[in-house]
Amino acid sequence: MRIRALVLLGTIAGLCLLLLTLQMRSRASLASDALAIVTTPVQTGLARVNRVAFGAWATYLDWKNVRAENGRLRAEAQRLRVEALQVGEMADENRRLRRLLVLKESLPLETMSGEIIAREWGGWVRSLTVNRGRTDRVMRLTAVIAPEGLVGRVVDVRPSASVVQVLTDPASTVGAHVVRTRTSGIVEGDPRGTLRLKYMARDGAGIQVGDLVVSSGQGGLFPRGIPVGRVRAIDDRGSALFHYAQLVPVVDFARIDEVLLITGDATRDVAAHFPGDGS
Amino acid sequence: MKTLLAVAVLGGGVVHATLGPALRIADVAPDIPLIVVVLLALRRGPEFGCAAGFVAGLLQDAAGGGLMGVQALTKAVIGFGIGAAGGRLRVRQPLVQVPGLVLLTILEGLARFALLQLFRFPAPFGELMTYVVLPQALYNGFLGAALVLALAWSESARSA
Image (tube, rainbow over the protein chains, first blue to last red):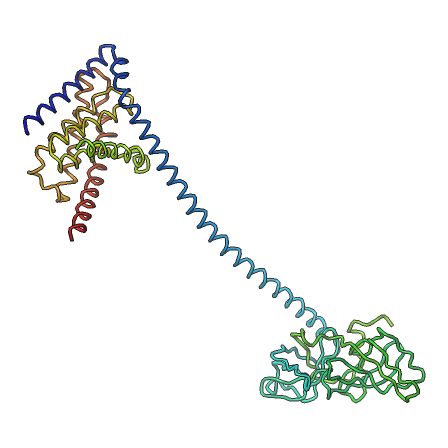
């Protein structure tokens, strides 16, 4: 066994030395060519295996990178969507608060801002709950307004919240008049969630669809000139003493989030501080 | 045996060609065929080690484009020597593996240099030893030790 190994080593050593000698005696090409017959196919095979292995590895790495990138981009897109929603929400809130602040600062009235924290929209009762209460010195029957117009009045004061009866509540009544014609009447809530202007004198009424109705200020509860609604339809009852008009509230009670509570004297005319109809 | 030899040596060549560039650290690449030859010689004896060293070295010579037969001869001698001394070496000890492979790589480098000098092939000794042989020897030592440990672990896992 040992002799066989020694013979093999001797043979290999001799072969290598012969190869080297041939190469040094300017017969390099002959020796190289002879070897190339054996080594070139092997090298070609190795290179092919190498390429395949590297190709597979590169494909795997690409796939892994693409997958990781895909996951990262999905998370990024999700985050950006949430951020966009938040930004939109904040911009919207900012715009609303700005309008409320402008109104608060321009009104010649003492007011306090409040945030809507609950809504009761059953039909029997239509009310909003504001995060201002007894601790903020809110009184019962305090008028509540928004930049668009009148919201309602406080009907229940709790330690840190108040319940506001909105104009569309069936029990709500507000003295009002049509801006264009000065026709007086009473605005009442309707179980369907709309408003009705009642008890208008037939003679000389002349109201039209689209006319703006504002608070009359009678009774001293609501300041004069706060928009209440716009005439949507006129219900002419022929020879009846009074006739009625259906109104669309100027305030969207379902979407309102911030309000002003009038805490001081409410007898002033504030019509100039609300959007009118030019009449 | 021939099939095993071919698979082992070509496998070493494939690993060298495929992983060699990837395993390069600071422009130093390990001599994977040398490690494969040493491992084969330790397990299969001097004949196998000698043949494996010859084939692996010849392929490296052909791939390198230098004098053909230099690495074939040095690796064959190393394969033979390690195969013959295998029984007396405690190769499972990392304290033997790392310095052993470092020493073998240096010996192979010296042998290659001697052969090149013998055949009047220009090669600067100092630079070759400093920048090529010694860094590669260290790399081979650690990589070879890791391979031996991995093989020993897989064998023990298989037998358990």
